[in-house]
Image (cartoon, rainbow, N blue to C red; front, top):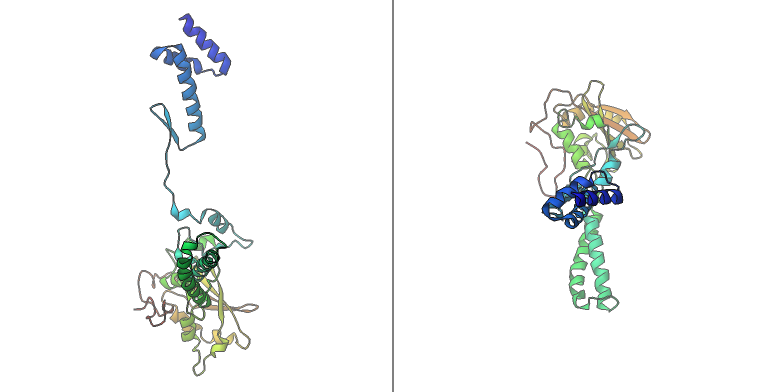
Length: 316
């Protein structure tokens, strides 16, 4: 008993830990004072590391590290998501940002151009012995040349996505208020496209009667430059299409076709509204709350095909 009390007092005074004597007595009962001190120190150190590292745990007296599964969905979204969720001065956030990985948000032209160019550069350097890897220079040149050509071709035919600024409360109404065509427009124009002259090419051709009698000449067709998601005064979902006019295009071309715009982008849409801006016009498509045009209902041919020769999408 005296040895136990002396050992406990010495350890308590040296370490300054009030509860260490109780742990020492438990160690003594298993095999002696010297062994208890080693056991206490080892377990105290392990416990400290467990508190500082959440993925560390104790098993059979040994420190082991648990391996956490990697979340590929958050590979590119940690910092970007925080930035996208910060509202601007008008309360809008980035409505085109998607938390989950989506390959359509990346430019295939840039991927092919940069990867092929890297293979070509390194292949030529290795072929002339400026860089190591002479044995593989031919393979890099063989694959790098077509990859670069494909990248150039896709880059030339690439149509960049348009920005989408959204009110947070409007984003919450996408699943409950927005029609299928409204969602389809937003998802389509905020991705990279290839082979199209501009976004909503087919829709503008039908609405403005491009190249037809009493229609708009193709050289004057407006360009879609942005989207906005808002909530109307009666709590409905509104999608605002922002167009930039070319010189010679008159705003009255939109005004006299409001009924056609409403029918074309319906059903489930109120009468479209047009508002002039400094460099163009804004067309507002607001859901009417009837539920029409949702869940695979009747749709019009709004979007062009994915590739030339394919039929228009989402038509019945």
